[in-house]
View 1 (cartoon, rainbow, N blue to C red):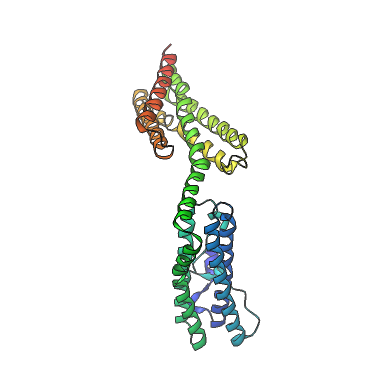
View 2 (view 1 turned 120 degrees about the vertical axis):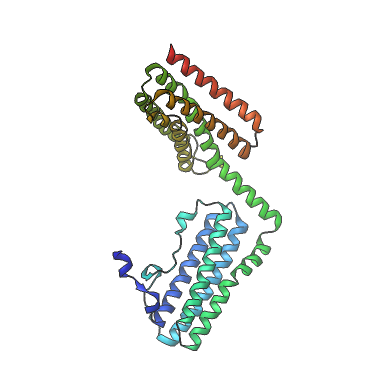
Length: 324
């Protein structure tokens, strides 16, 4: 609350401050577009060229705004940015969007254009100077036309084959970096923890002890799988992507895979907890089969047979060991 009260309301901005805000906003947007371009240039050069073109347009807008400011108010531009204005739209930092899929980055750029158009329309309504109002209106139209510009740039740099290739490459990279390590972790967490959890459950019939064993096994397996995945391949030669991302995906999914059938043992009644845990196990195994079918193109029934049969055998082994 303290920070919002320290901000200036948009309706209280002077015309000089509105121009200064527009200048800084155009500068920020150009940098964001160039950040997109640099992060995509190696893998998606066609899309990177689109963002280079959009950044160049933002530079042109900024220069027109600076020229108008110099004519009206002189060369000294007040320092005012988005974060100084209450209710002003914010931009996502580029480092937060680098991990987004290619199509999502394109959608983020489209949202930027819509935000900028609304800003210029609102700003034009708050100015009385004819030249300023005219320029802001022109820039609003330009931002609205950015979609057309993007389409023109797309036709220049992204033919159908290039677009299909980039989209296919983005999907492949997503699978290599996130899906494969996550699936391996989910399989390991779901299957490897079955025996110790159900062996403990049937040996002690103590739900709290079983939960603690399951928690320890899940967290331990998650840490182990995460570090193993991150250390096994730096991704430079294999093209599998950042080892930190892969390690995170593997570690988190391993932990979740084990916790799924450990959490029911927070229920104090042993048989109620066990029945629910077994149901959860089969849901986990079918989920693994579905992921294999969707992303790895493994026939569903073959994947289901392999995963469910293997999981059932491990589950049976745990029960038999616990009863022995």
